[in-house]
Length: 131
Image (cartoon, rainbow, N blue to C red; front, side, top):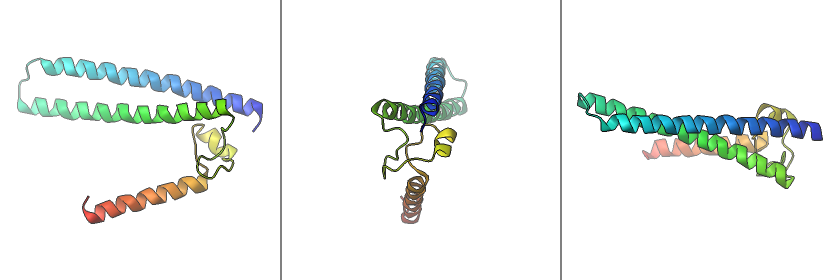
């Protein structure tokens, strides 16, 4: 990987980090507003249920943003360590095209596909077992 490409990908990761931090902050502010509104009197049990559902959705979104931010931080740590672009699983180089498409990628495509297949099988097993 060329130093120019590495610098470009690092800048994209830093921009993604700023974006995600802003989104997380926005979600937290919205959760606080929702909590304040929940403290006010509700007109019905349906309103309370809708508020709870909305709160759970916002928590899920915030959790997704935090997971994405963790991936970005992992990639930035790998850049600092000099291991960026190497698969976390097999230690082989990750295709430049993959990194250009998703700079925070930590697995090469063969390892990513194996991981997805393993998780799909796990989900299927849970569905079959009822858990």
